[in-house]
Length: 417
View (cartoon, rainbow, N blue to C red):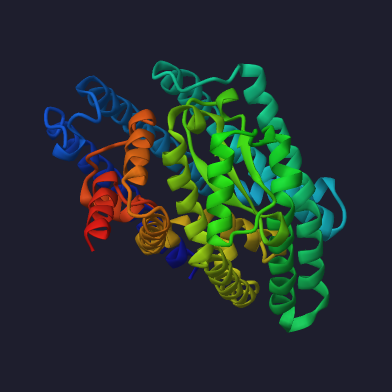
C-alpha cells in the first residue's frame, strides 16, 4: 500500500510540475506576442518604453521562476528518494529524549534545512533581478537581519503552538482533533489581533499619516463610510523595495489601513482616497470575516483528516517514516501535500478576484463614480511593471486580483450603470 501511495503522490507531483510549466510558458508567449501592441485603453497613460520594460521584467521573473520551481521540485524528490525524513527522524530520536521535545526539534530542523535550500534563489531574485529593474532597496545586512528575525518570530510562535498541539494529540483521546482545532482557531485570532502592533513593527516602521490634505481626505472618507480604525499608517516600504501597495490589517479595535510610502509618493490624494475606499470595501463587504470563517471550516476538515491518517502506517512508510508520529503527520501535511492542494488554486483565486471586484464597485460608489481608482490602478501596474497582457488561463489559475484590463472594464460598466 505504501508503494501505491507514493506512486499516486508522484503522479500528482508530475501533474503539478507540468501544469505549472505549461501555464507559465503560455503566459509569457502571450505577453511576447503583444509586445508591439499596447492595449488601447492604456494609450497615452503608459509609455511604450515602460510597457516594453514590464515585458522584460516579467519574462526575466518567469524564466527564473521556472528554474527555481524546478530546483525546488528536485529538492523535494531528493528528500523523498533518499529517505531523508526517516534518516533525520532517527538522528533526532537518538539525540533527544521525550516525544514532545523530539517532535518540536524535528519540525524545526526539517523546516530550516528545506528553507536554506531556497535562500540562494531568493537572494538572486532580490539582488539580481529586482536590482536590475530598480526595485531592490535592501542591503545584504538588512536581508540577513530580516531572515534572522523571521526565524526567531517563527520559533516564538511555533514552539508553544506545537507543544500544546502535541499535548492535545497525546492526552485528549479520540477527539484530540476537535480540541486541537479549537485551540488553533483561537491562536489564529490572537495572531490576527497582535500582528499590526507586535509583529509587523519588527520589520517595518509605521507612522501615523501626517496632517495635511491627504489625511483630511482619507479620514473624511473613513467617517463617511462609518469605518472605525486605529488609524491610517505610512509604512517605510521604500527601505526594502520600490514596489508599492496598500493593505488592511488587524481585527476589531486593532484594525488599521497601511499605505506604503512608495504608494503615497506616486498617487494623487484623490487616487489614494479611491484606493482607501477599495480597502474599506473589503471590510464593508465582510470579506475579512468570510475568509476567517472559511479558514476555520477548512482547518476543521484538515484536523479531522489528520486524525484519520495518524494511525495509517502505509502513509508514513510512503514518506520514509519508520512509524506513525505526531511530528511525522505534520511534516507530511506541511511539506508534501501541495501537489494535491495545488489544483484547488483556481477556486481560491476565483473567490479572491470576486472579492476584488466587489471592493472596486464599493469604491466606485462611495467616490461618486469618478475615474480616480482606474487611474490609480494604472499607476500601480505601471510602476510595479505588472504583466499587462496575461494569458487568460494563467490569470484564471493564479491571479488573486483581476488583470488590469478586466478591472478597468468592470469599473467602466459600473460608471455607466
